[in-house]
Length: 418
Image (tube, rainbow, N blue to C red; front, side, top):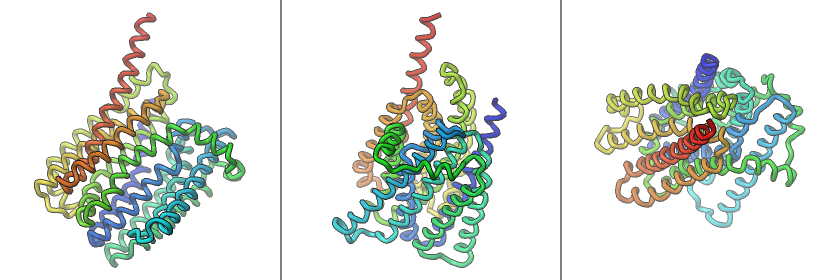
């Protein structure tokens, strides 16, 4: 069982690594080829896309990994997820158009925001398609598809680096095309999916949408508040600090991206693996599988701190001053706490603690918003990084308390019945 788990970890890490790694490398190339102001604009629109990727599926990626099965019922759940995405995309697009026509016609970058929304639509559908396939147990298909994706993104990077920068609008259009191509390849070559049956089950009736939202209720709410505390601050900051400071802030966050892919890859396999483990053995299995990775990560982060100056200069090009050094400590704290939280989150899903998971992320979102108000006026760039750090620490503390308290009660109950 352990060897199979490690195999899936390896495949999922490689797959997520190709996706996140190529996007991460693209961010570095854009940082080096665009002006800091244009990089800030691209990062802002891309944050809108990332924010909506958490909203549109309404918790379906985690829900489908937990509920997937290659049957008529499984296809119906996937079709319901697609229906939710299309419905919420239509609502968000109409809301945006009404806002710029009636409320704020002078909104900065209003011509780029619709492209961010379209990109989020395609990314959301891709996410649930591959989550469904992983839930069935196939972790190699995504790797094959996104090998093509990575190659195309690297070709874009090569063009930008050797030929020269292009407009932010054209970059977004290329990303839309490349991700749409991945969806087309998945539809053509997937052996797990019957797309004719899938299309026939897509339903926009009021009752069908209501039932689909109900089944994903706390999954969706949790993803929304997670998006608020992880991406919402980035959207707010764009309008309250200068483009230069915002560009530097996003440049520093590039350092987190490689570790974010590890969180996603490990947590997805962990959920797929632990859902077959008896409830009373989940904690033991979790610690056996997750804690060794945590120890390895901690060693790696200590190494990054030791070589912080050359790493910062190589990746971001920023001057390594006292403010940057303090910000690096915050970034390493975010990376470590996020990794631990991602594993505990999957345990809460398995234990049907979605309601508690939602409240934890809500606390993180509120911390993020409050810290923006309190820290930004006084601390600038370091304050911007601290907003992310504080919200991650709050989530880290609360999620461990909830999970460990559950297991303590379970142990007490078992001891009383011996």
